[in-house]
Length: 68
Image 1: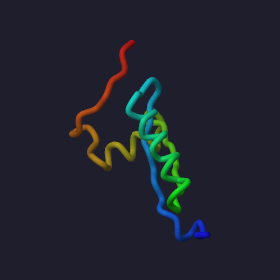
Image 2: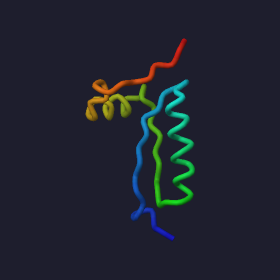
Image 3: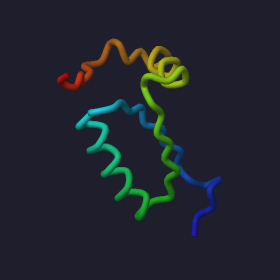
């Protein structure tokens, strides 16, 4: 079995009522059973999430805004 230090670190920015986020979580969950992954979910509304989004220039990407 792979050690945590050998694992692939994956960070996923998420937000409430996000269908794409739910899909990504499901896929990552399946992949975790097959590959040495350590997945971290980060709320986009959090300070850390906002910082990562700005650093990754996510404002230039197409984003999904859930309906009210």
